[in-house]
Length: 493
Image (tube, rainbow, N blue to C red; front, side, top):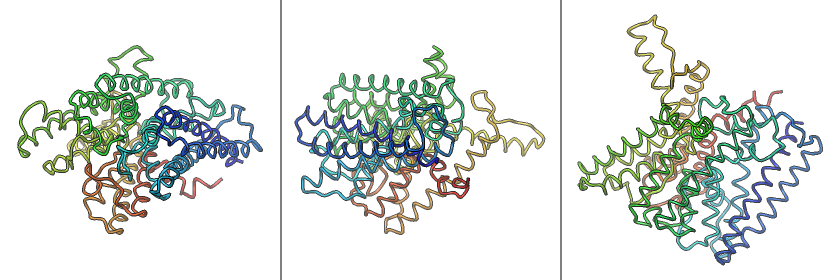
C-alpha cells in the first residue's frame, strides 16, 4: 500500500512542522503582543493531523523499519508536503485577522503562506509595521524553513525515512545535476547542508545586529535574507532602515546565499575553500550579479541623472542583487528608474542563482549548459565532424542531463506563457501579468506595475492569487517534479 506508506512519512513531517508553531508562540509571549492565541489552536490541529496520518500509515507499514521509499514515493511526498503545509501555515493568518475584525479568506491566507514557504516574498498584507511580532516572525520563519527545504530537513532528522531518504532528496533539491551524492549517506548530506545554512544564518543575524538592527529585526531579516525570501516586517521593506552599512551587509549575504550550499559543504568537508572559487557556476553567479549591478549604476548615471558616486553604486547593487538573487527586498521604487534597469533585474531573477542555493528560477548551471550547447552547435557549422563534448568545470555533461535541461527550458517557457495568459484573461495589463508570473515562478516576489516594490498583491482577485500561488509552487519544485504527478505513467503500476 504505497499511499499509506507515504501517508505515514507525511504524518511525521506534519508533526515536525507542528512544532514550528512554538517559535511564534514564544515570540508572542516574549513581546506580550497578544497574538499567541492565533497559533495555539492551529498547532494542536496540525499535531493531531500528523498523529492521525502516522497512525494510518502504521496499519500497513512499520515506519521505524529502514524501508526504501522509491522515486515515485518521493515525488508524491514532495507534492503533498508543498501543497498541504501552506494550508496548515495559513491557519494562524486566518484566525488572527478574523479576530481583529479584518477577515482574511483562505485564498489570501494560502497565498501568504505559500509565498513564505516557497521563499517568494510576495504579500497581500498591508500595515506590516503595525502587525504583532508573532505574525511577522511566522512569515519570516516560514521562509527560513522553506529556504533549505522542509524535506531536506526531514531527511536529516527523521529516522523513519531510512534508506528512502535519497528519493526525497532527489525530488526536493534543485538543479540538473541533482543525482550526484556529496556523501555516501543521504542523511549525512542533509545534515551537512543544514549545518552550513544554520552557520551562515547565525553570521547574518550577528552582522545585522552589529549593524544597528534590533534583535527582532535582525532575526526577521536574517530569516528572509538567507532564504532569499525577502519578506520584511515593514511596508518600506529594507528601505525602512535607510542604512548604507546594513545594505552592504545584505548584499554580501544575498550573494553568499545565491551560491550552492552543497558547494560550501564540500569545501568545508574537504578543507579546501578555494574549491568555491574554482567552481564555474559560483563564479558565473557572482560575476553576473556584480557585473549587472555595475551596468545598472552606469545607466542611473547616464540616463537617470544620478551622481557617479558610492551611493549610486550601492543603490544599484542592492536592488539588483536583491531581485536577481530572488530575494525581493527593495530600498526604493526601482520601477521609477530607466526601464532597462527593472526589466534587466526581473529577467536576471530567472537565471542568476546557483543550483543548490536557496534561490529559484532556471539556475546558473542550466544557463552554462545551454551556453556550451549553443557554442558546440556554432562549432559544428564550421566543423561538422568535430566531436566536442559539453563540459562544465572540467566534467563532461552527459546527454541525459542535456536533454533534461532542454525539456525544462521548454516547459518553463510554456508555463510562463500559459500563466501569463490566465492573468490577462482575468483583466490584468500585460506588464503586471508577465512580471507577476515571472516574479512568482522564480520565487522572487515583487514584479512591475501594480505588484511592484511600491505596491503588493493585495489588489489581486482570488483567481489571480491562485494563479500566482500555482506559479510559486511550480517554481519551488522546478515544474517537472510537480507536473509529473499529473501524468498517466506516474500512476500506472
